[in-house]
Amino acid sequence: MTTSIAIIGAGLGGLLLARVLHVHGIPATVYEADTSSAARSQGGMLDIHKATGQAALRTADLTREFEQRICWGADCTRVLDKHGAVLVEKAANDGGGRPEVQRGALRRMLLESLPPHAVRWGHKLATAAPLGAGRHALHFTNGQQVEVDLLVGADGAWSKVRPLLTTAQPVYSGMSYVETFVRNCDAQHPLLAKAVGQGMLIAPDEGKAIMAHREPGAVLHAYIAITQSADWFAALDFASAEAKQQVAKAFEDWAPELVGLITDAEHPLIHRPIFELPRHTRWAANPGVTLVGDAAHLMAPSGDGANLALLDGAQLGQAIARHPENLAAGLQAYEAEMFERNEAARTEAEAMLKVLFGPGAARAMQGFFSQGSQA
Ligand SMILES: Cc1cc2nc3c(=O)[nH]c(=O)nc-3n(C[C@H](O)[C@H](O)[C@H](O)COP(=O)(O)OP(=O)(O)OC[C@H]3O[C@@H](n4cnc5c(N)ncnc54)[C@H](O)[C@@H]3O)c2cc1C
Image: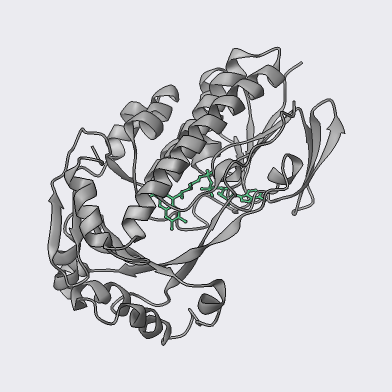
């Protein structure tokens, strides 16, 4: 009898898992809430790390396809202080550890690597009920139902699968990002374009930062990080024209070529509150259900989350393929390694975020780069 495998969520983690299973000749169905691959913009640039994201893509036999999508030259970095002084100017290191790719291009590549109809769009999981012996009944908000032998939650921060394994819930981190886009930057916003450069800009100060990437098509895509309570952000009306000025107020004494990434942005700004799962979130093995990516180990953005989701997908796929007659053993092997890896990654990420948002942040980031921590 063929094992029926349902993956909830067509993000990077779920799709990479489906791809690795496909490479091993194991069928799986991905159920995605979005109504199509184009339903939502997929966010900006991701640097794909050698030991995690690139290793996962190799396992999925997609290295060549990935290399065709790299934005060559986009992995250079500038660190500016809040007055606009350049503290770090790191050249692109093409072929090095962290090439940049657009998240949308990476997701499309994964979708194209799967058999037709592997993804069922417009299937938002509502509930999953255990049936015994590891099987689950899945109910989708579109009225569809299905029973499966193995259920994988790849459904991100607000996973509907996670509660089958743990009571852990995401908690607001105390910081939000405000996402902005400045288009046609060379012609209309040359000072901003110059400040960002050809790759990534980081301008940090204690508890806040302006971070941006130049993207193909003369687009500056920024994340404005601000440490404030959820109530502070709730009082802002992001749909209103005043939101830009209200957000910019947090950067009153900053250089205009940095604040312009807020005030010259297209309307409306997008609020991205940052949530995290409690540290040490783990669960007892369950023979028919597991999690990958943010569903398993949501943490504040540190440049690792998407990479770790890809690696989870690759390793779970391999573990299932290695234990065709004993899924429970496959899940246990995957989870043991995943828990360890992500705990270590979180420790490293927290240390990096302390530098980025701690006292004397700009100088501390300068030190971080001069020690080659980004190599
Ligand atoms: C502002 C910001 C910036 C970031 N920058 C970076 C970065 O530069 N580098 C990096 O490596 N990481 C970054 N991350 C982290 C990264 O985005 C995540 O860790 C990564 O996307 C997790 O992938 P995933 O596949 O687990 O989940 P997701 O990408 O969240 O995908 C989950 C999928 O599940 C679907 N879904 C959700 N609920 C359901 C449901 N009930 N039924 C069916 N489908 C469902 C969603 O529609 C989505 O398609 C950033 C995060 C944020 C918030």
